[in-house]
Structures are given as C-alpha cells and as structure tokens.
Image (cartoon, rainbow, N blue to C red):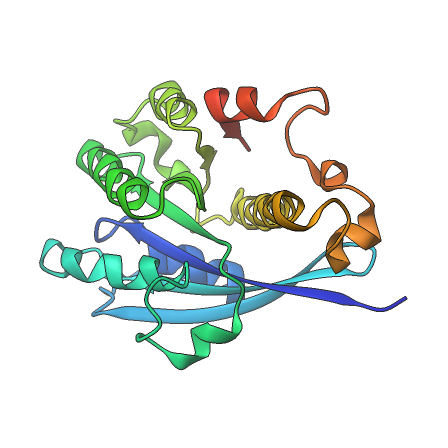
Length: 235
C-alpha cells in the first residue's frame, strides 16, 4: 500500500514562561528542561506521526517568543503558517495552507489565560476560521496552584469553536494525545475544504479512508454546526 504523507504547519502562541518550548521539545524529542530559557524570537522542530493505515502526518512546529516586547512578531509566524505571508522562510512554501495554532496558557497563571483571548481575536481577524485552534492549559502538574478553572477554559473554548486540552510538558501527560488530535483535526479540515471545491474523495487521504468522518474526534452523529458551537475537549 502506498504511504500517504501530509504536511502541516503548526504555531505555538502564548505568554512567556507558559511552557510553549517545553511542549514542543517534549513532543519532538521526549525531553524536558526544568530551567526556563526564554525563546528569543522563534524556534522550529518537526515530527512525523502515523495515524493508522498508510496515513502519516508531518508536523512543522514553530515556537514563538511570548514576551510582550515580541508580541508584534507573532502575526508574522501565524500568517505565514496559513500561506498569507511567504517571506519568513521559503521552506514554508512547500507545505499546504491548512494548519493549526496551539494557544498555550499556564493553569496557575490567570493572566496568561486572559492573553490567550487576545491571540484568538488576532487569529480570527486575520484568518477567520481557516486555522484549527487548540486552547492548551499547560502545567497540570501544578494543579494545587491552579488559578484557571478547567471548566472556565473549556467553556471559553467551546464558545469560540476551538478545541481544548490540558497537559503537562513536565510529566508528559496528555502531550502526545493533543498533537495527535491536532493532526486529525487538520486532516479533517483539509478534507472538508477539498470536498467543497473538488467533490468527495479527491485527496489521497480520502481515497485511503473513504471519508473524513472515519477520523472524527467528536461523536459520529455530531453535526459540524454543533461541533463549532460546543468545541472539543481532549481531556
């Protein structure tokens, strides 16, 4: 059976010290550095994962600086991740335009969660609903210091039609799961867009699986409108 490889770009956004780099390194290298090192501008890593059968996904993951003084740089990266700005790196041009944004906050830092809402507004204003958004509550290993209630974050994510996950880059809890779910969501969205323009079953992914519904995270009977209204939670 011919192997199908799909490539997607993902950008990590959020305040400094919320663990964006730690999430990327934990997922791509299975390592964790307990000492905080600020990302100066941006870091890059990639990983290929198998989703079953002959389908494989290559994730190109960009980690952006979270400090306030670098906040204006953020739009450069996530605009490029949708193919709207092709000047950051020529490397990006070989990837398809469908990608995801992981908006990360620290569950023990309310301010970092509040800033996520600003990132959402910027993403929506520039990309509408063309990007798959995951709201990520990191550092669940600090549960006793939690200041952001899980239900509050989950309800907010549902209100904007985003996916929601909590994880810990330190303990590795939930990290692989969230990236796998992100990959599935991007595959689904890519298939949906292709169906809108070319009809059903026109991509290698669709030819292999027959239908995008075979990789639905949500209930099989849940409609697209319901999914957008309610959001999805992977933990």
